[in-house]
Image (cartoon, rainbow over all chains, first blue to last red; front, side):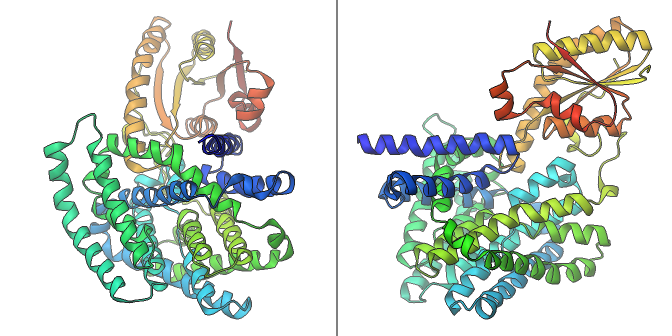
Length: 404
Length: 141
């Protein structure tokens, strides 16, 4: 066990360094963990030997995969079903176009401009089709746009985009055998039954210190994850679907979400993101920076070509249309999950993985910088006279607007 | 320069308390309005359910602090407004100052070691760098 403990300490040390770096640079921790994973693997590989991190160890792979599954479940559970129902046409169309345009466009770019195989090109399309709900929500929260109708519609559309991504990832590379049919059938049954069964089960037996709710959810996620792997699909597909269907019930239990987030972001996702970063080949990036730039530009361009006319069709003013387009061009979590899926299933090689990951990281930063610098729809921000001060907050936050 | 609206960034710490005391004295002398801004950090990565819980928690926490500040402001006959905002402290204090046309920002200075400042950055230093109005940085006494 000595080796396991010491290796775990090394990984958590890297996670801590990544967190401090993210605080200093004010970037997302996930982004910082990917970069730290890349740099650590490079430095350790040059000095001690690349085996020290043990990225192929079974327990590290398990923690990493569990991190991806729980992260995906939590992402799905953040969905606001009320917004999706009330703006279903707008969120549905914008979200679908936001997925389809870069999926097809980036796949075409990889196939015809970079000369990748058809499978590798489709994988690039999937990885670059995503929108980062976390990045979009963080940006909107800072400005107070998350509580506006515009903000809610864009966030709702982001979920639809990511749903397209996980479905494409889960089914595009599946062999479509009897196993695939069994996996799809069982998943559909569970997705249909769970919103009815889970709240009742939790009401009957939950609310105790034994963390029954967490164990129940992990059981479902692991079982369907196993079934997905057996069918040669991807475990994040059922995880996201389960998160989405439980969003209105279990997802609203902030105490349960808090506990799941603690174990997910405190232990599991650092393993996932650092591992994902450790597979990035810096020499490959240095050798072909144009491939990275090309993929990033392809994503931004195809998102713009798809989203600009659609948002205008829904009568978004130009500033809002530009802002929505840029925010929906972000990507991080599902992009990295897709890329890692491609690498571990040998759909793409390490160099291609590195290009896709670098483009994904670029898309987490570049569009938000441009959007916030030039296209913030300031007229939507809550007025300064309101307690929520210059749109910084949702209304309930400013509780103390009183004369002393 | 005689300020008419002073905005204080308050995180409940001892140095913030000193900064509020100085701002209160100044406001009483200048017959200025006083605003106090406390900033809560959203969870990272942010999620709506968690953010709302963080907002509720921060609001109840700071409300207790604000009750004390209001009593002190009343004793000095200074009009006081209090706000709990969410986001990055520097961004939110600067936005609040701009939105409410504050002509002086007052913040405490923790006097942390150079290493800690290098690792996590200094809120007061960043406010001084980016503010568009005068900033008074008060050290705890």
